[in-house]
Length: 434
Ligand code: GLA
Image (tube, rainbow, N blue to C red):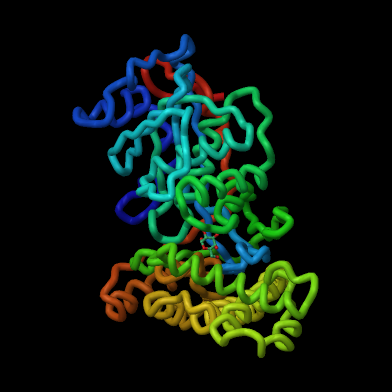
């Protein structure tokens, strides 16, 4: 749910809309042919039927550290103010009925008997059911609910709408009164949902960023230790996302090929270097002295990963020092490496980066996320965001025939309940504040 200019609605307005729709019975109210009108399968609401909960989970943009997560390396994502919100009403039934307002679809699933199925179609509801499955596998009790959902995270743009859906679901499903494991563990539970239940072999970065985000900060995540340190965003820089308008075409097979090339590289190096478990353990010098045992393509993939880990730490340092020149160099090196060595960029991403770096006030620009489409991330001097937007709007469509979108994002807190909206639907709709 964004307006024509792609601007998310004000929180009050958004909450009111969700709560109204929840009170009205979700999509079923406006969808006579929808999956259900009212309660599914004769389910009865609890005595506490007017109790409502609002939860949210952010998408993410990765500043640097691309494809390093599944190599047990370092990443530096930011949880952003593009979020999935769910308003829900718990009930006693062991089932979930959820309406997506954006898709105008209602879907439901039982909480018992969920099983991974590699042939799954990867429908949006599978991410919710997968989270329920994974939480139960981890021994966490889940509750049934009826809910409505809306999203300001664009789908297929590489800003992790799937991870946001999983993390929002994990809060919606959490049985009250049960201690919640920390964000790192919840991220691993959500990642398992995606890997095993939905069948997408992603790393842990996206779920971790959505779970653990910190307002005003990026997160330096160590994907081996599963720990993070918040890194303050420089106050004089904005993070601007440029969406190429070409959907992220990272089919699982290209992603999985990159993963196995990296794993092969680590295995071949480990034959000569005891103690190497993953590319995380390989320093640039170690790679150089073992390069001859690697097939050329594998060596290229390894070179990207090994140097990208170094660039993540250098970026944190440059942010701390406010060293714009270093930030620009690091972003440029990361983009070039993803384009030439890891080979996951695209003509559209390269064009977008090319435009951005020519705009005064743009400190750094690079592709972000898995690649083959989606978005670039830009560090821009505050006050110069509009200049970047204008340059992209003026030049990019002519270069690619595509319609881009450009927007500044801010670093927000990770997923959780929306404080101030827990309460009851009074007179049918509207939150009870406080
Ligand atoms: C996708 C995956 C992440 C990560 C990035 C690339 O977003 O979900 O785990 O591997 O690609 O950095």
